[in-house]
Image 1 (cartoon, each protein chain N blue to C red):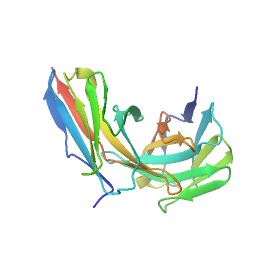
Image 2 (spheres, chains in turn yellow, cyan):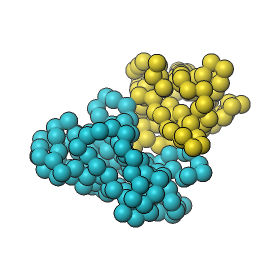
Image 3 (cartoon, rainbow over the protein chains, first blue to last red):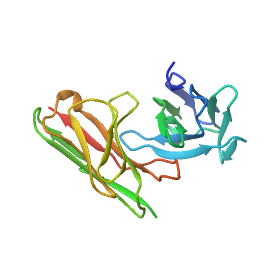
Image 4 (cartoon, chains in turn orange, green):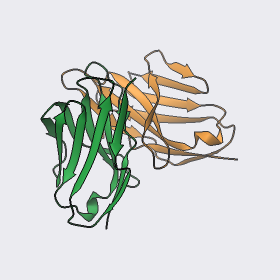
Length: 111
Length: 112
């Protein structure tokens, strides 16, 4: 089983749609979680951290389920500008710190 | 505030030629530094990471090497490039006590 696995894609949705991405991780020692956004031919940029209680930033909601070992990202009222690749990142901190990236899922929002 | 820069942004190199990509971080001390490669349609592959000056760990055996001559400088090199070295190379940093990773702007390498 891969350390971090993301939904297969791509996702193609109309403007205004709600879209959800899931990401599962295999190492229960993982301690921090993030979603990054990567635009075409650009570097990944932090979209939001994922907290145990779940967190929201405008149209974006991130959730963590430690029992089932997955994180999710919900985008409401999709905009054309949301078109990008979304990467989940899982971090095992401490002495054996290791960041692991999902392969990313590409979202295309159409007019 | 902290910033990270890498260069060159784009380069086209013939097979067998050398490579040097440079990355510098400003506004922080003793960061963990990383080199990643992202091939077309694939995920991020960790190539090297460094926890301090002169300390380099390699994740994937290949014809690339990395050096950290100064605290905030990280260099990716190759003596002889292969076609398979083409890709998007990203330098990144994290703080020892933190865990959010920040990326440089990336360098597009095409080996011809």
